[in-house]
Length: 183
Image (cartoon, rainbow, N blue to C red; front, side):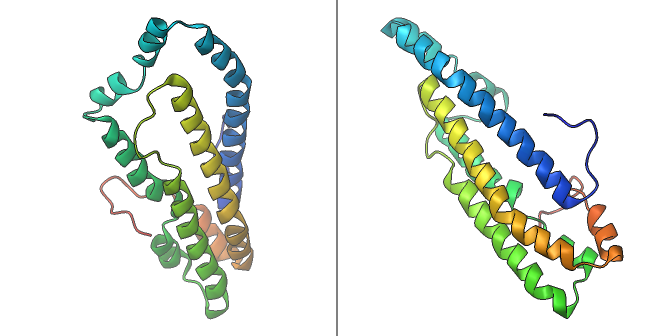
């Protein structure tokens, strides 16, 4: 599902992300029953060792000290991953008065998507492999829902743009390192 090139338009980029999420969700569905069967075949000692393979080693390599910190990291990232940089878009596009309603709907949809994604963050890191697996599935579903929330507003706003505005929007990328996130 990985594209060899990045699509030019924001809508096409969103579709690419949607496809990757759909493919990942399908892969999770394929693996879920065998994982459940395997986990249920383990004795208690094996389950404890399997659970110990969880996120703690990777988290400590990144300087994260506890399971609750992992949940906090998820929460902080939710907003950054879903909220469109609306101030940057507004500065680059310079919407006309007629385009402001569509732009406001995009701003609202972006904030709603961020809230949806933030709500999918666990309050604590799940302890068992099956619970962690299910948390990943829940997170992917929230990403899918967030895209579905933003897509209609983005399509409407993009359709309202002139060719020149579309060209400027198409070239907007992520903020440069060190630039403050705006939304």
